Image 1 (cartoon, helix red, strand yellow):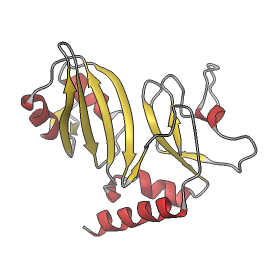
Image 2 (cartoon, one colour; image 1 turned 90 degrees about the vertical axis):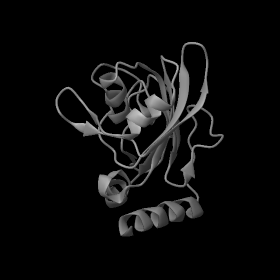
Image 3 (spheres, rainbow, N blue to C red; image 1 turned 120 degrees about the horizontal axis):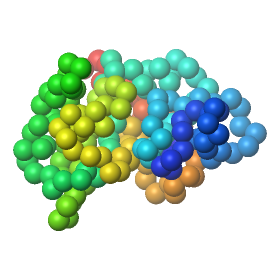
Image 4 (tube, helix red, strand yellow; image 1 turned 135 degrees about the vertical axis):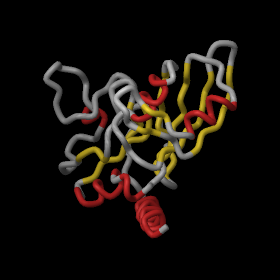
Length: 179
């Protein structure tokens, strides 16, 4: 697992010379691929594996494995915003997007931190939901994948999953798929 810093691309190499997530992994590791993606402006929990079937299962919308995000938006959020993003939001191109759960963490005079849970992994889903509503995402941090929290892992730091963490992710995928 890696706590991906903002401004880093989730790619093995970048034709524009930008820093990639691989710069933060220990040298000498076997080949590893990211499990899903976080866009350049997003940060937080990113998993890596050399098991492509497992990676596909973690990322697959059919598993409904929850991904939890903390999102800072440029407005004072209220229950109406929460109700709107947990209902279906239809983007300008007709795509229907929603969140599974959302709540306000804290807000100031001009912005709000929300906790948002997704159980499907569509490309830039949260950014597209908020853009459709005319709300700017100022920060987006993935803080958990299923039962696995980012915890206190420092920004840019990585570490192997424990056997127990891997087993808890596997259990969560089986439970959500069976439900």
